[in-house]
Amino acid sequence: MRLVDPHCHLNADRFADDVDAVLDAAQTAGVERILVPGWNVASSDRALALVERHPWLHAGVGVHPHDAAKVDDAGWGRIVAWSGRPEVRAIGETGLDYDRVFSPVPDQLLNLRRNLALAAETGKPVILHCRSAAGRRDAQDALLAELRALGPDRPTPIVHSFSGPPDYAAAMLDLGAVLSFSGLVFRRGEEASADAAQAAPLDRVLVETDAPFLSPPGAPRGRNEPEWVRITAAWLAERQAVPPDDLGSALVATYDRLVGSP
Image (tube, rainbow, N blue to C red; front, side, top):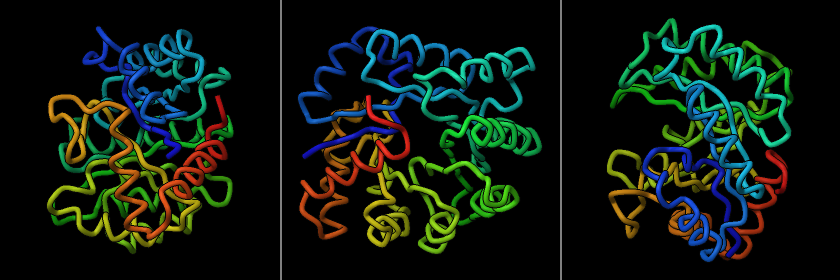
C-alpha cells in the first residue's frame, strides 16, 4: 500500500538522535511522501535544514496558535522570507486552539490571519490546527468564519488531525478543504471524527501521524513515527470500504495535487 505522511514533526527534539533511521523505517513501510511542518521560527528553520539533507521530504513554515503571542515581527519576517523557497510546500501549521489557550485568543486570530494571507499570497495550501474544549466547537466555528471571510481567493485548507462532527467536515469540504486524519480518531470521544472520515470523499482525505504525537493503536506510545501512518491508512480503507491499494493511490494523488511530488 502506498503511503504518505503530510504532517510529521521530524523537526522535533525527540527525533534529533535517529531521524535517519526513522526515515529508513518509514520508506520500508511504504511511505513515499512526508511533509515536515514548522510551528514557530526555530522549528520552521529545522524543517528546512532537514529537507536540505533529505530532498524527498517537504517543509511547511508558519506559526502555531500556541506560539501566536511569542513570535515578534523579526521572527515573522523570517517565516515570510522562507515561504517563497521551493522546498516549502505549505504554510503552517497554524490555526486556533481554544482548548489549552497557550496564547490569548485575540493573538491567535491575528496570527491565523497573517498565516492565511501568506498562504494566499504564495499560492500554497495552509495547514490548520483546530481544537475546542471538550463538548464545545467554538474554535471550529471561528475557523470556518475566518476562511469564509476570505472569499473565493482563500488558500486550500488542509485540516490537520481532523477533530469535529460531520457537519463541520462538510462545511470545510464546501470551502475546498482536504481533511487529514491521525491516530486521534481512535480515541474515546472522537467518534464523530471517525464518522466524518467515513463520509468524506476519497479524493479529499489524507492520513497523517502528527509524529511524535497521537500514536494509533499498535504503535509505540512513547513516540509516534511516520511508519505507523499505515495503521491509520488501513483503518480508513476499512471505514471507506475501499481496497487498501486504491486508498493508497488516492492518498498519493491527493498529496501530489496539494503539495507536489518529491
